[in-house]
Image (cartoon, rainbow, N blue to C red; front, top):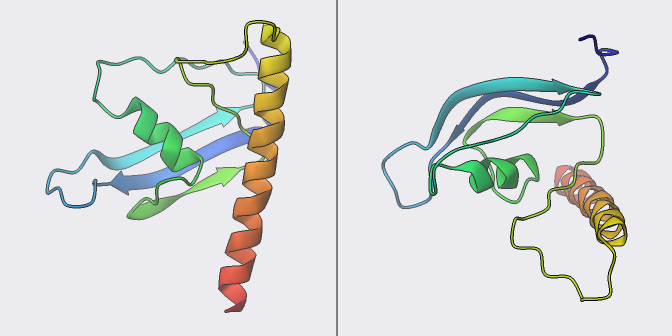
Length: 116
């Protein structure tokens, strides 16, 4: 299987520990996702799957490492609560629009913080 090589997401040397805890959850995590790749993240409850997504979204801050994003990313939780009349396609599109707006807001905050 070949991909066009366009980078969607790269994580480099990510480390994360929940505040107030001594045990490190992620240590030296690195990976990349290319355009066209499909990835599944599987694991037991409480092992950090949702935390990884929150780090990617910048909702949590990694202690070390960085994320490079080339596209807007959207994550849909497994506990979707949409109105009974909403079509799945409409829900997914609205989630993508919100993700794009959220990432724009994060970028503006980063720029504003650098200017302070």
